[in-house]
Image (cartoon, rainbow, N blue to C red):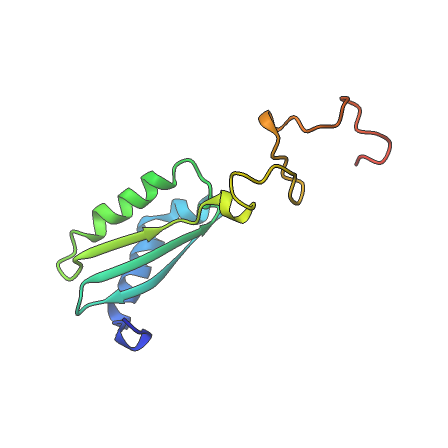
Length: 121
């Protein structure tokens, strides 16, 4: 499927539905994008990002999106992708801190004391 195969009217309707019926995505700092909407094959691909990445309820959101859109007569298959937050942190095996995100057990860090020092803000 190429961009030229996408049906703009189906894409616009799915985007409108997401904005209208799923405001929780934006309310929680998330984003949604319709990556494909092909009325010939009935395939719709949606990608969630922003606050959705790593959100504990993103599975519920994706299930709700899929459950509604699959009832549309012109849609045969719905795929909703949510990036794994661990991927942007170097994966689950990365031990060190990245950009201030503490990867040590329990988030306690490895400071050696509870005093952060004079340079701490």
